[in-house]
Length: 137
Image (cartoon, rainbow, N blue to C red; front, side, top):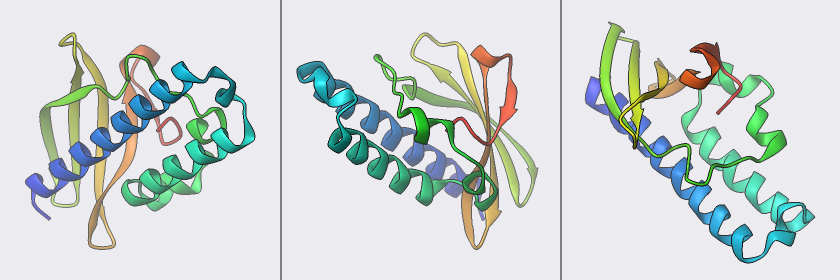
């Protein structure tokens, strides 16, 4: 239940989401028809669901996930983030702040210890005035 383990979980999630964004950004740049193509959308969704199922809390997964509906990604990737600081709430709950590649704070994540694993429970986004959500992953 260490802070380092929680941090590693978040880093892995951010990296996998960034890779997902880059992959689909490159594919759709070369073949824009795939953006609304059923096969392309299904592949994007399947990859996204695998990432989310691995890293999100049961509560976050129980809610409708906006990105699963829109399948949006950023170019440049919105998950181009680095962890900038942490705040230990208790032994089962830790908050992390991230900065984007411009050095501005961009995301705030709350991780909880659930079923013997660290899971991402809540994300707040700077561009949404730090509104708390379990649905914007």
